[in-house]
Length: 416
Image 1 (cartoon, rainbow, N blue to C red):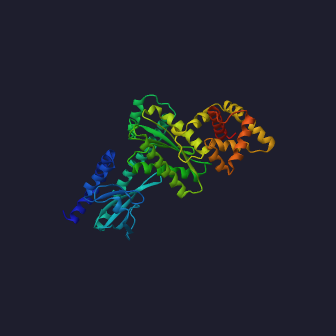
Image 2: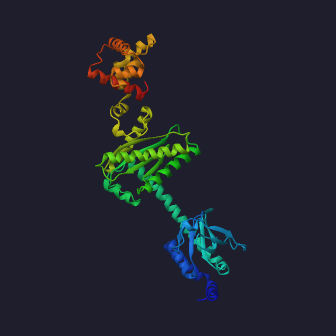
Image 3: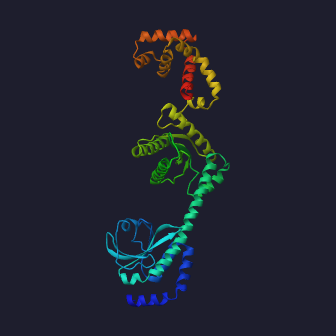
């Protein structure tokens, strides 16, 4: 059919707008793809929907995609605007075309543009009204989708909170809910907590958390993993999926590399902020992931206290026991083991506590400790002998060594 004949047919039919409206309304109720196909069949022209930056969201023509379209040059043509629909000359990498762009707007939000594309500007310009009408139908559908997505996000956040705080008791329920978002809780997972230290709730720092969250999602997606993430106060929580629980070395290396990548990225763009993390244990049963979350928080706290960059809860031995134990009991224990030496130093302005702490840190090895303290071995031996007298102990006793190591851990963890 010649262009003029097709125009005459379209414009004659278009006078009866309710027919067009009904067909487009029915198509839009099925989905935007169906709406575009219906409009294409009515006009016999390619139809494309983009976001505000001209990234293609939907297209009736498979040759039109974001890679070619968003990099095109758009030059507005000197025509009268028709109900906000504008005509453009569009220079893509491969060819030149004209397009009628109708904005897709709902509740003062511009979702993008509906383009009717072709070669004849006169022909295309006559479709301004139908473009505007179709764009309004798209706006309704896109607004509805946005509201549904917002509800899904709320629902997703509620689910993740229940999961991380142990409110979901049935494995089958967790797996079923996870399937909604494409998460496979049949596989083992572990929890990682990332956090900004000295966080406040100013908008700038919230934006940093959002950027961390987005970057984490990108890394996981690039690795073929569907992100399971949550922002909570000053934390970004990641439930990290693993393929198997039977290869702990490779799994640990994978998670460590991922955590380093996140921390290094944030440091590279926000060097004034410090991001720290903590990593819980791996669990194959999703009902136990709340344990991994609690462990990740403990590892995070201990990582700060012990100056560990990537702290794994599973690698914290005595520290994690002492950290969670009753504080009053720990203070009494510390006082029993080291109290007399601490008092002696206070009265005599001494540094025997420092000597004993270095001795314990160097595995009770005289040679290593002497080097660390820049002391002669005989001087160190004299100090250690004096410590034995004050505490009434023998430092070669294995149980005494354990008591001293534990006491200094308590001092470090609880800043006594």
